[in-house]
Image (tube, rainbow, N blue to C red; front, side, top):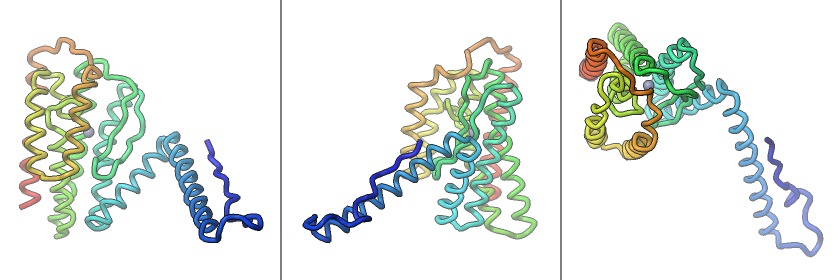
Length: 261
Ligand SMILES: [Zn+2]
């Protein structure tokens, strides 16, 4: 779709006896802004229809926003950590033959991959959910080891925030990764996830945290039926899944302590 605004104002000059000069200038400026907005909208619509391009553009935007706030090495590194986390999900989704969109990066809110079809079983949802934090943990571990080996504090702080990011995603509240994982263990754990999320965001004292809480709670209460069908999972498998989830959460908290220390 292409939007062409009327750009005649100011360009050809008004007829004699037209509006005063300041008004002509103003309408010229308005036309220029409209034109720029229309171009932006066209580009945005175009980008969102080509999944990889949407990913690339939002990736660059995120890296730029984080870079402008915390330095370029950190900005690009953090966007890469988000990318690896999402690729972890992506690989398993595709392995199950489910359709998935390319990841979209939203500055300060993280990144997301859109499932176009719900997982067929709690086991599938567990594997898809666990793959993201697993990839993110390994990437953060690589950053930590490199940071220690090369004596680069920026890599160490990248690892620190990387581990915290994985730990946050492991909060057992659907649709967070942890919530999708515990769906295969016992869905009652979701109700522990709500106070846990509130405590974590209160500790972070971040205004963006409030937006994240609002979005997550809205999704939880309105869309949790989109989770995989609640089918029978053998008790031994529930136990193994539960241990896997707890181990990942504790490992990331412990590693964050090491990276931050
Ligand atoms: Zn994830």
